[in-house]
Image 1 (cartoon, helix red, strand yellow):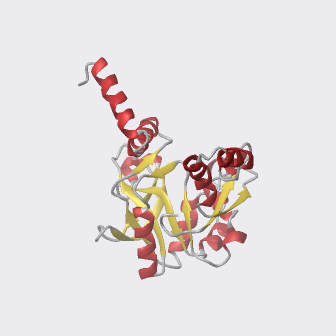
Image 2 (spheres, rainbow, N blue to C red; image 1 turned 90 degrees about the vertical axis):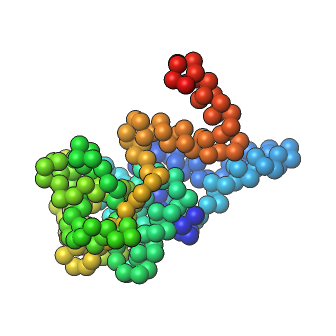
Image 3 (cartoon, rainbow, N blue to C red; image 1 turned 60 degrees about the vertical axis):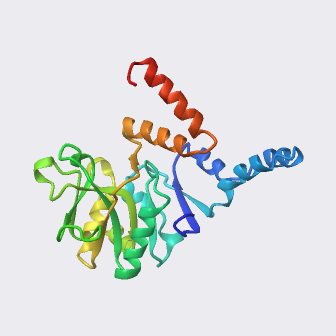
Length: 249
């Protein structure tokens, strides 16, 4: 992958077999494209299967993000590892994750991606309490809370769905108790880990889309389509035509 990570564990649940099929080979299609001499299409089909060494683990019960991360314990062992949430995508050529890896290499500590949000938005996210304002995009953390009310939030920096953990996070996950809805909150484990070791926040400046939000989902699709050389020019023309028809240009 673009950040240099080559071993990927995807934690799935019920009715998620399409995810596994997406990264699996389609031998019939590959053979048909090869026989037909359609080499460029064959490269595109094989791209997803050659990204990394991909493994799967099943989260049998929907017990929250903390539980999903804990499922990975036996695969990860005692190595540092990254967590990438699928409902938050990054369109930045892996710049965010590479920056987080640089902080880990320097500090040998866990790193959490954060982004500035408005007071109205902060109650939808985990929120960090930084020791000091960011310096070169990095802050040491003092605390973290899950979805605080706007008037109780310790900052306007929201957790952004990318984490780089030391393996001690698994011991913290084993100590937390279920919260609302019976879920194990990852923020509770992070708070416990903070009692034992430093954790840093890395500020995400651009390219993040929370596709759980309708407008972010739409914008991500538009921007990704415009970035594609095979679709971008024609799609841009379509968008301009739609805007003119609606009197917006």
